[in-house]
Length: 602
Image 1 (tube, rainbow, N blue to C red):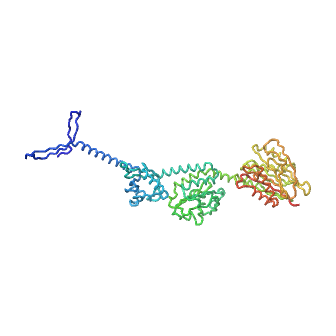
Image 2: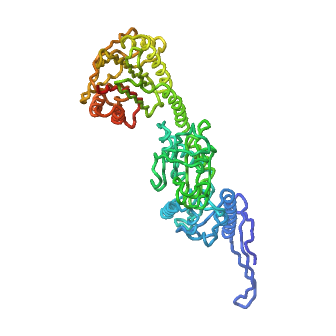
Image 3: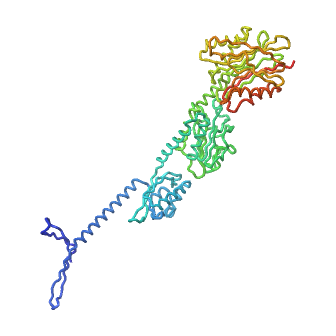
């Protein structure tokens, strides 16, 4: 018997030979009359042979395609996995076991979920279930997997259903390590968010508070930020005063509230980080920080179940101006170098406001020394009680352009003066000192009316200080006759003096007024005279005492008059203190100086 024998045949209606396949079968046969013969059967099998060859070709093509696919998968990913149509893993994955450490028994069915980070399991299950239910053409997701070597890394999952017609027979997927890509994307996302939340922020405490809210929960479970108000004049290795300006936790406000001052001993890790001017980093079992990081009783900034912490000094021009403490808790991956680098980059946004704050501190130190040298104690004058007060602005340098002065002339007259040079900075303070001393010299030089003295001061300012303007009250208290006191005064663009009588009657002295100094050439400065009743109080003050934002000045003057009237019977020092307490607000943004004089009871 011959099977599938090829035979070339010529056909009349065909231009070329064709190959056909036949099967030949020959056997002995007996005819009905008893004679013997041979039976030959010829069957054409061209179609069957062609179909079989086609099947063999397709099988080989599919085999090679599968081999190519497997090689491509191995080259392009670390793990390949197969699940049934309902989602349970059905085949072992050597790559999965190598990366996660899960055995086949741990991996099969839905055991793979145990390798996903606990914080991500719910979202992964929800998205995978929806993909199975809706038979999505492609399932992609990125989530962290626990590694066999410890810790977690992010993997990108890409899966698709395998169909036989309209029926899903299985799912096949791959997992690719994308940790670095994920870190880069997170970095860009956090930097963009930090830029957005700090765009209109200039104050260092507000800047640190905004950045703290970005850090939690993306990078840490809790974060606390401190400003160091004594940064410029603290000796390294000594105790540290830190102002806590922000405290945020992942669960909510479970840490000490912000805006609180903490006094840290020299053995504190925070002090060590400030002195080293570089990060202090520690990883430890949850809830068991090493003693050098958190000595017992000194860790209000450390979460109870923290597993790692980084203490980040924010260094500006070689000085540690702020400290940031970030903690990670529980089984969340501990803080590492990528997180520390990102934290440092985020905190660089606070450099400018912190630099301004340090410059403010430097200016304040210089201005404070200037204040102490110029704002002297009043003289002792028989029959007169004199008190002085100075309160700096809460937002400008320690001393600005406000001054007060009091002294006794050779003829026995007592001089009081207050003034205000435009500006709230160190140059204003310097100019203030120069004008104050100039006014002293002009007053001592000649025994002349107060208006004439201010006219000479005005001429000097317009000659020597071309860009300067100032306001001033100059008062001279004389005794024209025994037992009688008289006030000679001049007011140049300044709030009027307040006279408070013994019975509480209070009124402003509105005579002797002229424009501010340095404003108009050849200005005439007049002198007014007013008697001073026994036991009365004369108050000279700068505008910081009566001015408030979005309020008319007359409202502030009326408020001062009422406070002074109420406190009139108080001794002079408490009288001044009550005025300051009642008139100044927590957001006072101007300096305030005042001089009060009270006539003793005859």
